[in-house]
Image (cartoon, chains in turn red, blue):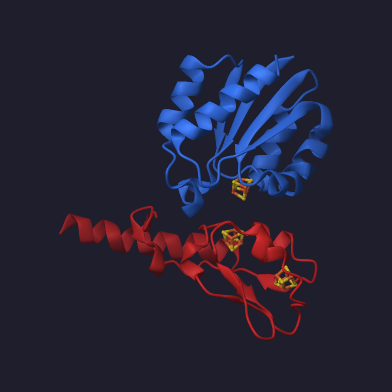
Length: 95
Length: 117
Ligand code: SF4
Ligand code: SF4
Ligand code: SF4
């Protein structure tokens, strides 16, 4: 699996879905939709079990959730965070 | 019909596409396979990709898309085709590249291009 994104360790990038358990009806759409095993059925609702398998910048499953239970950070937040992390890892490389 | 190959790389970051070398894939399609042109895009299911589709897609071309699972592509690319005014049924041939290697994708695309003759 690709462990880095733009030379940043994937685990440092806060991009993954959040499921609102109140809204989730356990219809299972997202489980079939995501190829990367990010979701699993929990007791009450679907849960995010492998957040860092989520493709940075992808929010396709949210579009396919009939209940609007899946959300993501905004693209602006992502861009800002990536800017900070790129700087951090560029400095590390220079050392 | 002309044949165009649209490759969606899913930001080069999708774990399900980790065994594909997009550089080699694109170049070998261009050099070795009978198509009219190849386009590579990081995320065709998003606004940026839909803008590309709106400008690029036209009748008389068969678009072979290499991306996620076929049924997923149908949902995600529908708006792009619609905005371009091109009917998906006639002009679209999806191929899933999830969990495949470069060689497997090339073999499937070769078959699809033969079928579309
Ligand atoms: S698609 Fe939405 S409602 Fe259905 S299981 Fe997933 S999160 Fe729950
Ligand atoms: S955004 Fe994409 S990669 Fe992430 S969980 Fe949803 S479908 Fe899977
Ligand atoms: S169309 Fe599929 S492969 Fe392409 S970016 Fe969207 S989810 Fe990823």
